[in-house]
Image (cartoon, rainbow, N blue to C red; front, side):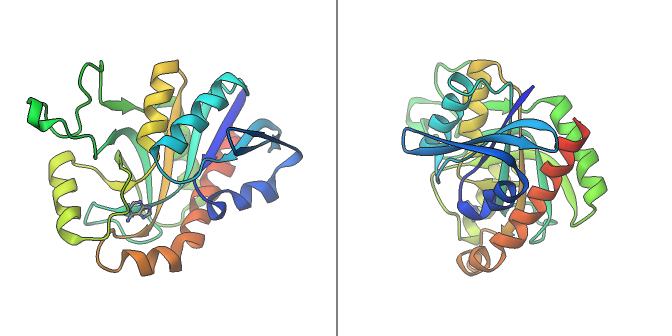
Length: 230
Ligand code: ADE
């Protein structure tokens, strides 16, 4: 078993770097990959960079070059569901790109033409494991549901309402659905774990700066427990 762990930013991976042993560093397509062990498991950790293209390239390299057989995305997101507070957790049941828009050709928003699917389901076993791990960590409320991704930092209440009403998404971020799509194309199981750094509203830019470290830690604690339980 070899587990790929992706975060988009330094804050999202730094606790993992501290928790890993036998670290070996390799660079590919300007992305740094850290091979090593965490809680006795073989792990490849990386910082993808922000956005869907970075995340997609990173995921394909993890699969092709580092031969990982499951992928966990760890990090922060903006809350869409009204019951979510900063620090709460969303475990993905599935992920979808909210910025795919081919509506002029008659497709619904978020639908990728000629693709067998546009909502990419996470792995049931990894979801169960993440739920169990989050119960043990016991910090913040834990939700499972659809995670939305787009190449946009959302900081507007009206956009939050629109995303929530159009897709029924729990939270929004900028990488998960592209990781999900690449995993689906390669038949690799994945799960996304996101802790809320902000509510994607008019205060999002301030909250994001203030709470990204706390939220990243919550996500890290869950993945840490998951690795112990594997
Ligand atoms: N990641 C964390 N907060 C976000 C937001 N409001 N929009 C997009 N990605 C995010």
